[in-house]
Length: 120
Image (cartoon, rainbow, N blue to C red):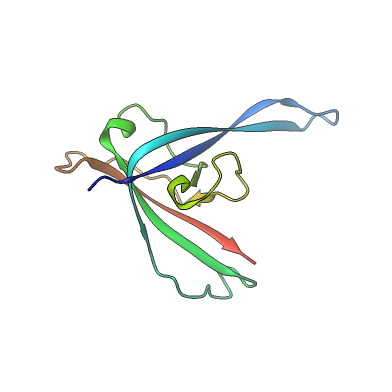
């Protein structure tokens, strides 16, 4: 298995605006060799997304990246190899929860993150 390239987008505070509210900027980090598989493709329930579909994938990240990566909580993931723009945080998928590494892990991938987007 070769995997595909995804972009992990992290938000950092860059300052404050004229009203004293924080301003943020997104930075993308490309990660190669990720395994991406779609989860259930059914329509979202009213509780999940009343006006749209919920798009879900599971992304397995390689050990070579997760050994040095910061936690994924609050991040977004763009499936670059599938046509998503690494510079568009609004179009990227949101990471569900706070994925953790699996150790020991006998494969090349030691962390799986569920990612989603509700369109509607």
